[in-house]
Amino acid sequence: MKITFFLIPKNEVIYLPLNSTMRQALEKMEYHRFTAIPLIDEHGKYAGTITEGDLLWKLKNTPDLTFAGTERIMLKEVPRRMTNTPVRINSEMEDLVSLAVLQNFVPVLDDSDIFIGIIRRREIIEYYAKLADHPQAMNRAAGV
Image 1 (cartoon, rainbow, N blue to C red):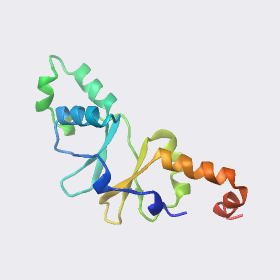
Image 2 (cartoon, rainbow, N blue to C red):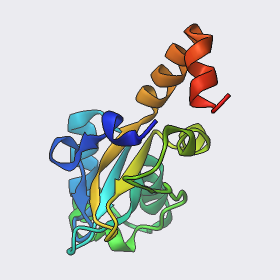
Image 3 (tube, one colour):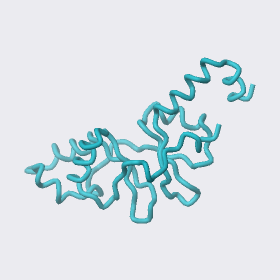
Image 4 (tube, one colour):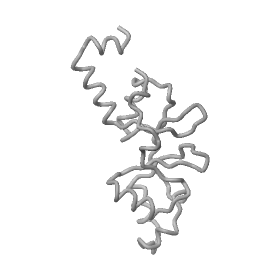
């Protein structure tokens, strides 16, 4: 099944420009209660995902960095420990399963690598749970 049905479009996704500060990321994550947020470059392309852990490790490993000082640290300067692998809009749900094991969400790109939204792990699990409840549908999805 094509992933477009499950896509949460960019205009409904909380994301940050890559040129944001560490403080902006912390405040946005706190406000929305997220542990990870996609990053978008100045051309609208997916630039990675920043996590709470990335921010915590930067804070820990930067001597004398205070919360107030985080407004001077750009997200480009924060090492990221994970790579959220994106998929193309023409991907199938089957392409997302292995990614959902490691990622809370899967970024979705168009053919020009422009970020167009995400698919959350929850939707992927719900899709396969419904298939499991209906074995005939699972056989069709598997091409049997």
